[in-house]
Amino acid sequence: MSEKYLYIETYGCQMNDYDSERIKNVIGIPETKDPSKADIIIINTCAIRAKADQKALSSLGKFKNLKKNNPNLIVGMTGCVAQLYGKKLLSNAPHLDFVLGPRSIPKLPEIINNIEIEKTRIVETSYDVEEPFEIMPYHDKGKVTSFLSIQQGCNKTCTYCIVPTVRGKEINRPADDILLEANYLIQKGVKEITLIGQTVNSWKSNGLKFSDLLNLVGELESLERIRFTTSYPRDCTKKLIKAMKTNPKVCSHIHLPVQSGSNNILSKMNRTYTSQWYLDVVNRLKDEIADMAVSSDIIVGFPGETEKDFEQTLKLIEEVEFDTCFSFKYSPRPGTPAAVMENFIDSDIAGKRLSILQEFQRKITYKKNEERAGKIEEVLVEGISKNDPENLMGRTSQNRIVNFAAKNNLVGRLVNVKINNGFQNSLLGTII
Ligand code: SAH
Ligand code: F3S
Image 1 (spheres, rainbow, N blue to C red):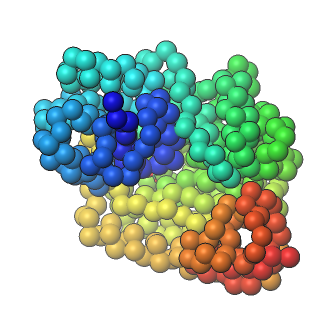
Image 2 (cartoon, rainbow, N blue to C red):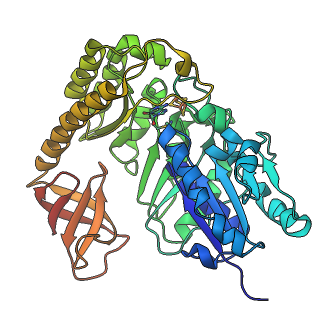
């Protein structure tokens, strides 16, 4: 029998990237980049905004003809769109063989086996999986950085967000299990681990808090750096800030989504903090940790957002001076409280606000990058630069990309680079 191949398409956040690696590992057949050569096709989807949904559905459509020509081909949809629409997807797409929610990845081999033997179509979207973290990702050799999931789901109740619906309640992975995967990564040559979870700093397990976990991971030899994402502002405790400050492996960067600068909107979003409270946390972080970088997410055009609310968001951006910020137009999600709120904002108005905000932030990012010129930065070398094969690329502790010329192979090493120029998305320097 000839060898079988898996083709997988991934949309959305880091958690989906991580889950796709778990899918590759659990299916255990080689990957192909050409869907026409595949025996199994999987689309790992994102449902965070309406556009993401549409992408998932249109990518599914692409494989209709392949299935017609090869009835043995197995086509599956995984991820958040799969969880959200469940069996409706099967009736809308006759060429789809299975629909599998994010919690159920460990059940994949059994599902594929059943489809092969019984030619059935399967929907698996239950939340109660006995060992939700059982399957580790397929970790390629030679990677310098890696994600490591420490948490699934989310216990917060932000009124715009579909994540708690599609990924379920928060479950935290036990520390031993996390350390096991961390050690495995280190053996494979990984130097930087990014701990991931929807509200990663809310992690707790067997009496341990997230700050304790940072210290446990920090003790692992041969690991140079630790990052974590995404942090929830209310769970940014003094203990966490202390752990970040005292643990030399923890990078000086936090992704801390604020969502809005208006207390009125924050309250409608059920974010459980005020803009002043957020500013206080950021100031504490910046006071305690030298050269602290803060990035954020912001939603514009949330129901009821006035010009004044929007101006307060701009004011907050000006005060914090985020290093980078991802911003989005509000998108109503089925079943969420915000989707039935009054005073919807016209899409054109939201679009205009989004461009104003993005232009405002673009200048701040540029200014902050320019300010690095003349400084010496410690850079973890990740590989060859994208723009110039003669250059190497790495990141600073603050998560800025640095390109620099270097002859010898320094991939995986920490080096000092003198910064010559700061651009919009990266820095250019000389190794010293
Ligand atoms: N805790 C998560 C947040 C997931 S969503 C994490 O790990 O990043 C990422 C960002 O998408 C959110 O911070 C928010 O800014 C944005 N977002 C979420 N729901 C949205 C919606 N309905 N419309 C527009 N943007 C949304
Ligand atoms: Fe979504 Fe809020 Fe959780 S943005 S992922 S419900 S913290």
